[in-house]
Image (cartoon, rainbow, N blue to C red; front, side):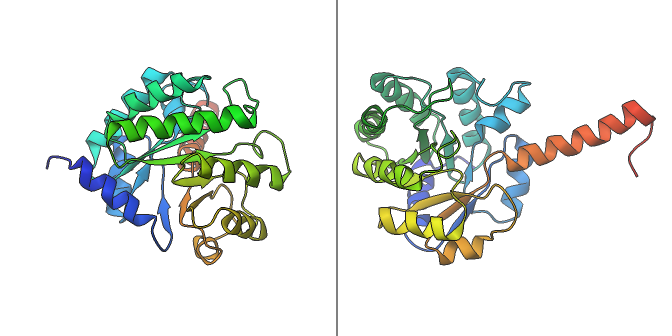
Length: 254
């Protein structure tokens, strides 16, 4: 069946209007097919999962790697695909706009841009907002209905100041983000603060450890839940466990 990109994009936007949905992150065709069979309504790429599959570390894939991966995922399924597009693979706003435009051509329904450069630190607030605005302008010029997700990486970069994260998310929403996301925010009281601060803009939460459920996040007002590289790491950890047993003991683990 030919993929209806416009329909996938419209369906993806509809998912954000009410309720809460789970957005799992496959990196290969087998994962896509399994997630389809489990009934998920949309999928997201994972840059770390893509990197591991290529024998690289998280943060080492190139723009060309990312675009090829997105083309592969979009061709593999009729489900909407959200792109984990790291920092847009550019430090300057014009570069972000140019690369987002290229990503739109792969058929994605959403694209996430983060405010951490690949050297590890955060862009200044004004610069980060300019980059979100550039991504927004690129989408608007394309005439597509692709959603823009803006990520604040402050907590992952070592800042525990939730007020700082919230201020950035609000600024990103003001610059045109359709959905905002702060990986590392998972305590329910903190999640509620974020949801209330940016309302009515939808909030994504990264479910990266046990102890919190999708139902609890939904009750806190979260619109979507993703898992990033969790599935990829679980798969590779299992692979290495069995392979190490073969190498060490000449047997499968008991």
